[in-house]
Image (cartoon, rainbow, N blue to C red; front, side, top):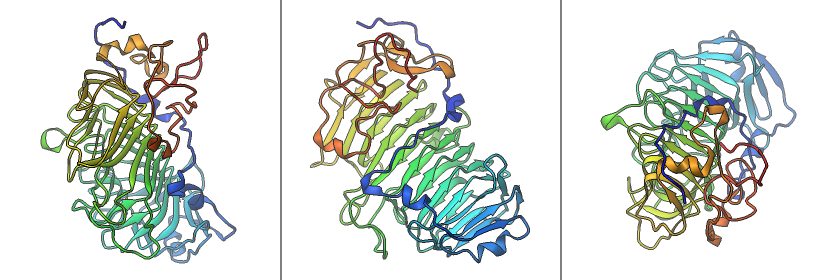
Length: 451
């Protein structure tokens, strides 16, 4: 029996943001990553602040534009830049250690995307200079932007207001890979889709990003009305995958009516193309939110093998927003919250939900959920069940002590279609049932920390 001990605030995990993140393969329903980043022989062009705009206009499929270190003050307009499947146009810094730095200009978004496809933008630094602009935006007047890869970008000083965004889409967008980017102190970290439910973002992968201390959302994907018919856009059910990211709101968050969850996902189309799409959200860290929950979702959501740490309030809320929750799978998560751990309310009739195998340490562990298939305990008792949940950042370890979280129940067969459903937060294959996101370690083994 776990015994109560005095509560202690978890040490912030933000110092771990520099930790290397393992990137797994994309799911079969969203075969995106490898096709987008593969390159075939093409021209390699070298750009500098004086000539790069002229070189942009000459790019064709397979070309690689290498940008020398320096300060670029004229933006990066990607207008009708067309690569090809497996043969993209690539634009990147010459060196990972010495980025090409793009400084913002008033009245213009820095990386501006219009009617472009199969393009890779990699290893740039985008400095907003405190101006009211977005760092990367697929513009609202574009017809579409698809198979865009944004990788290794560092985005800073885009927090002039909550409406200024690190990475945004305002046109129909699919086949995106948003990987390994760092966004610090933005108004909103990533915002995909339009506020009225048009211009959908779907069949994409958002992985291994660090989004730290935004004013509003670290990530929001808007609800979607009818999926527009666009030649080449997928029509079969697809996953939008959000994995191995760090969504941290430890400082600078808006309050009152401007308060936002770390992550919010809206529903997919209610009928027709896209109605069977799923958000597949796994292997992420959600940390700190003094005014809202860490995660909020509706529609079709699979949420598993994540770590939620909120010493200020609630962790997970599945609830109506612009419509209702539909098919919901929440399994294998570790949750530490001083408020509600997992709340599921307002589901649409005729759709099932499974909430099981979670380890929840919270003032109110479950709301709207039967608790038999989950391990629940008060928030402060996490230290009795986990190795080092409240330790210094580099010593944190959320793996269970001994047999404390043995069990876990049966996972429905329907949940086994999701990628890495049987892999824990640290990338360890689950060899037996247990509660939470971290596999127990063999007795006497120091093992790799799970965090």
